[in-house]
Image (cartoon, rainbow, N blue to C red; front, side):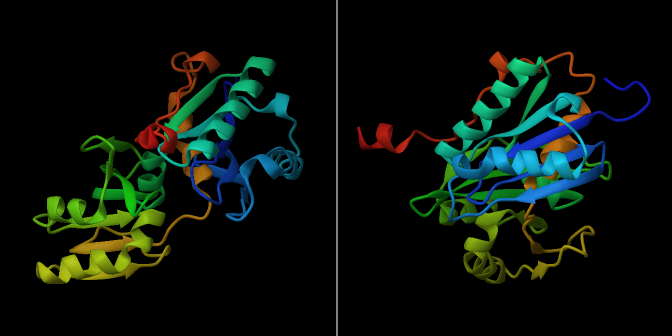
Amino acid sequence: MRADSHPLILSIETATRAGSLAVTSGEKVLVTRRGNASVSHSTNLLEQIKDALDEATLTLREVDALAVASGPGSFTGLRIGLATVKAFAATLEKPCVGIPTLHAVARSAGQSLCTIALLPAGRGEVFAQQLSVDADGVVLPLDDPAHIAPDILLKQVRARRNLRWAGEGAHIFLEAIKDSALTEGIEFRVQGSDDLGIDHGWTVVQSSEVLAASVGQLACRFAPFENESSPQDLQAIYGRPSDAELNA
């Protein structure tokens, strides 16, 4: 571990359909890669990692720590990401950190008193959580992550006058969010990535295409990785039963 600088972190996010990876040093993002939503993460993840490290002129052994989006998200994607990070960490004896996906979504959306991070969960439902993000990028949960139907979520939060909505799920259900806000007489807008100030009313924020960067930045806060850094301690947050369990 470097004593005079931030640790170099390779972060992997395979919880979403496209996925991404990044190499970060503190808040600085050195290299990023965005995946392809039409291609399985298992197809080219290792190749993308090699390409990113080559661009950063690093080897895997020179990385100080590994980070992974631990869920909720795609069952298959989560397993691929966690298995990859666990294998690297165990083989190279590197610390590894799991970052809740919804925390990374909220952080990528900027400072907010209350952000609802949303990811699609299939079957017309979403993974959702309310979180706050301070000016230093510290994320605090305001409730527990939920697997919920969007209409039920909207009924639960309709009394909140100031909300930020972030993540792929917020854009999939943008019209429902907009209709709910206007029905309640709440100001509504869609915000660009270059305008991340404190909001008034309900604001849907542009989704980050490289969520892994926020994963790495959040993981840096665990340095020097004395706790929660062993491969055997890394666990997925699934957020709902698998389809096989539901069908059974």
